[in-house]
Length: 575
Image 1 (cartoon, one colour):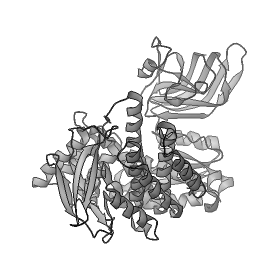
Image 2: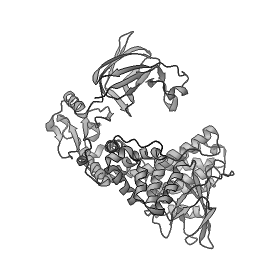
Image 3: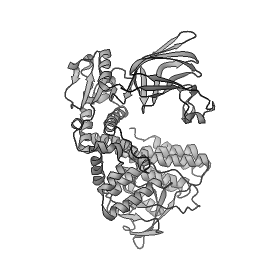
Image 4: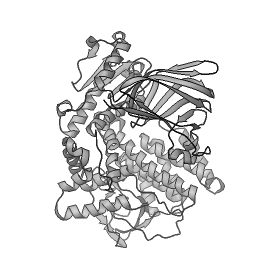
């Protein structure tokens, strides 16, 4: 058993990052967050060394009305009997709603606002507690019985139900089995035969939705899962991703890659990547891999955009999102090769503790291909910004010139920074978007590339499934060919991620002067027949950004903007 530590500092309002100061109190150690707060960094710290279990009483001063109190707590994994007493009027607030994060944060939530004043908070605690101890206590408190453990599930996972709720949770049980099967199929070995800790899911009324890392169990609100018909997709999606995350966390337990490697940042992204990938394989109707790709693209390009506005820079200087780089590596190395390397990596749990996944990936390769891809992957990790690939067609000769440039806020400026770019194209006569094999590499030392294109009445689209970390612009005729095709009944022959990419790129190019706004608005008109979530979500992200941050309201394009908003508001798809 280990010893936990609780460090207490002054209470500050957590008002940065858009949080409302009256909602959260932070009882925190003197860390970097204080540098951004107008209270200054004059906090003092009291530390409490916690034994294996016991009771703790702490005097605190709450300076702002709040519902949440945050402690800097190391190795405190389970608390109970939480009681907050106002020392002046002796009013008592109780709760069992708490959560721990990354083994360093303890968050306690109350049902009502706690006013400013002097308080004493008490709770029982366990530090470094093992799973059976937590399990026994929880079963005793909730009147569980071994006879009511669902036995249909694998020995590696168990679903616990109350005696009065045996009819609940069947939908949960069925899908947990699917998740476990998808996990085992992808990893390539049995979950419980490789000494992974078991996973317990407790179906309880009015779940506080706690997630405990050491005990590895999950609370599930039984009312959500009475039957398959009444469950909301977003609730189920979040829960099942949490379940897979638990499985992945156990697979990566103790993982601490060498920090000297530039790929140490990338390695930790594997967890989230695998969560979406495995959940998608178990429940493909949710299209989670498509959603993951959209979120990655939005997060990096949008953060670059906002960063540039806040700091008035001419370039987007952030490093590429690790998830995007991971997807590029997957496609460049080959999906099957990438998957097999992951299996090799995770099957050797001892090596996972000390070896970087990228090292394993490179070990599986050989010869010139290894050196070539290693140089390219390293450049992706270390280079800042991202490029634009521009395709300008010669319709008389059925050819096109491909050039690259760095994406700048000012389209009239020039940057000398260039990238290795993985290229592949789909054409109207060969619309195979499933084959994402790299067909050509754009060497940064080369000014341009020439490719063969289809007949002049057919489109070409670059960057299949938007796996590459770059935007793509075309001449206006090719944009028109794409737009007309999207408006036809064949639009689904273009991959859903590329449909989203076309919307994203067109509006961003228009906003920064690379493309006429009429091209973007004309393309978006196809959405009236679009049935997938990802293109719609992308469109509304662009509309919000144009309204919130751009100067479109004072331009000639404001009327088309309003018309587009109005027309699409009547037909948007709900997820």
